[in-house]
Amino acid sequence: MAGKISSRTAPAGPHGEVALAQGERVAMRMWRDEPPTDDKPSTTSPHETVGYVISGRAKLVLADRTIALEPGDSYCVPAHAVHTYHILETFTAIEATAPPAA
Image 1 (cartoon, rainbow, N blue to C red):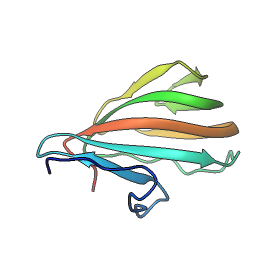
Image 2 (spheres, one colour; image 1 turned 120 degrees about the horizontal axis):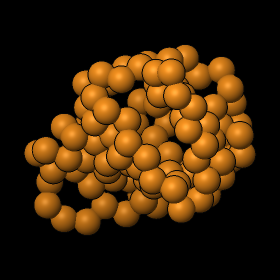
Image 3 (tube, rainbow, N blue to C red; image 1 turned 45 degrees about the vertical axis):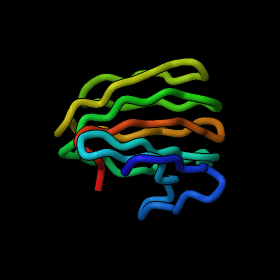
């Protein structure tokens, strides 16, 4: 879709994410003010995800590694990788997925 998407009026996705711009091969989304939690189940996705932390802190558990995430950090979750997030402080991040996440 060509054009502009405002985060103020963008629709919420099925998991609470804010759906931003999307093309045929890549999509953006925002996780806004995600509350602290350490009970998110591990998951896998058919898409690759890259993200940028705007605020808050989290731990990305990626297979057998734990990666600390803070404002200004970027991260990558390969397609089909088992992963989860432990949110330590209210967390906001922008992610791009390729192909677009469903």
